Length: 92
Image (tube, rainbow, N blue to C red; front, side, top):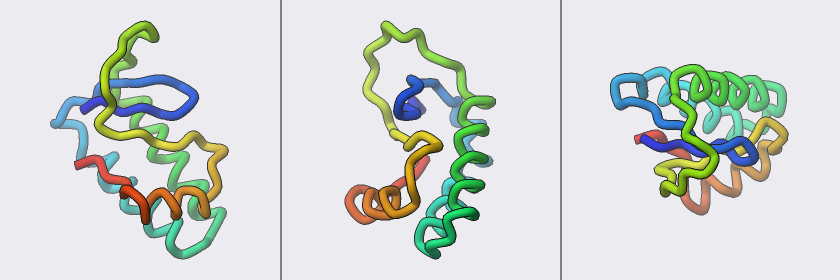
């Protein structure tokens, strides 16, 4: 799976490594929907760190469509919540 972190670039995560990010995505969704900004920031940070550690960065000059685009750490929970309503956030 190709994942883009906005403002950082893309990485490829093997299907065998999607379980942890998938769990963390659920935590991001729950925190965004609850409106708890601290919980949201912590959940998003954990998800991004998991993607960074499990993924293999793609070269910057690679042009590959992303299966998932994640917001950067500075994105507020209300903006992510709006994105969830529009197109969802899911690693699978």
